[in-house]
Length: 223
Image (cartoon, rainbow, N blue to C red; front, side, top):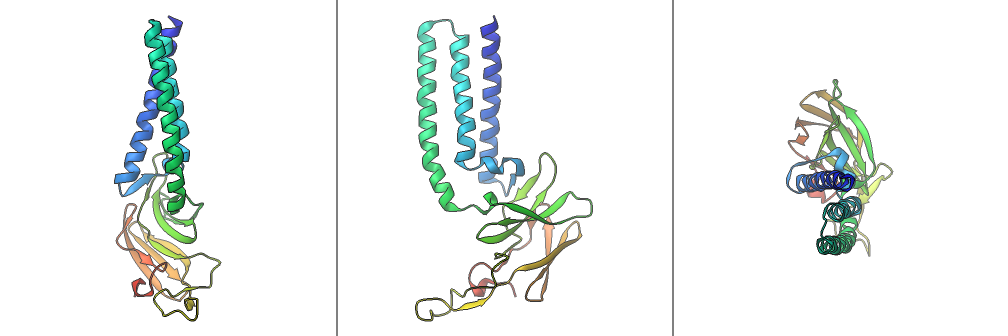
């Protein structure tokens, strides 16, 4: 009886874990936002160990709960193969994930918050700075659209990729960065940039009505 209870507990915990991981990955892939607490698990290096542990838990539950030796061996063998395949596929996927350089995986800094504290502007400190909106709390969400993309705070210049190369290098131009940010109300965000201009972005939850982009082509910069 003890073995069967242990099998039931392992099955419930492992199944709940797999459902949680699947729901988090599906949300991150199709929704215009992601759960803040799940962001570290979106890379294969984050979710693969959890999925492997859950798969091993299901295999162990089968071994504990089944009485027939043949069924036990079959479940254990299938579970072992599934775990090994998941690890191999996850290792390959993790390389691609790291090369893709998702800015949401970079360290984050809070920049501004609404008066009630339910909505924040955060900056992901990647090669550039990606400013995004997120809600707070246990089920806090972060939008996948940048409010603004700027040069890193330490950069004073950036390459003008549209200008003809000067020798072997692209000409440089002043880098625009966010100097200050504040929510004027629950639906409007005001950004002051280092070029002396002030921009107002309308926000709907974690979604801005536009992106202020100073990371790409000069012709795409906001006017």
